[in-house]
Length: 116
Image 1 (cartoon, rainbow, N blue to C red):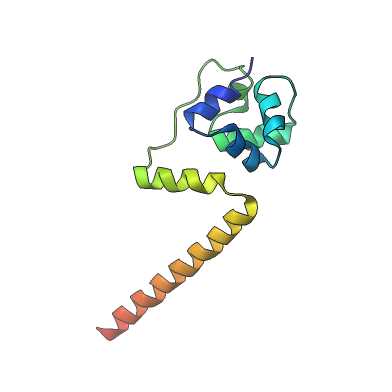
Image 2: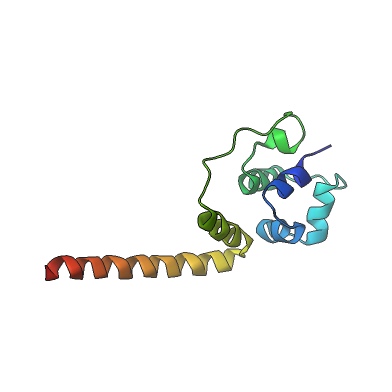
């Protein structure tokens, strides 16, 4: 028995969201989760990254999940959850927009510094 469902629920993801992150159908992910279909090693690596756990834990070979990463502020966690639900194209667009915002803030900081 695998721990896909347990890991997914701990992250509060829907099957649809995980399937979208993997680039597979919801039905295909559901089959992985229910043990009706084996997934490739690369899919296991992706799931491990998505859920923040080891492949051994996902496959049920490790009794407990390793300690979690440092806790994020609620707003950061909410933003990360939304980011992870985006398609790769959506993530790329968001990354571009974030770069734009950072460059605008940097330019504003330089203007303020030179004005003083």
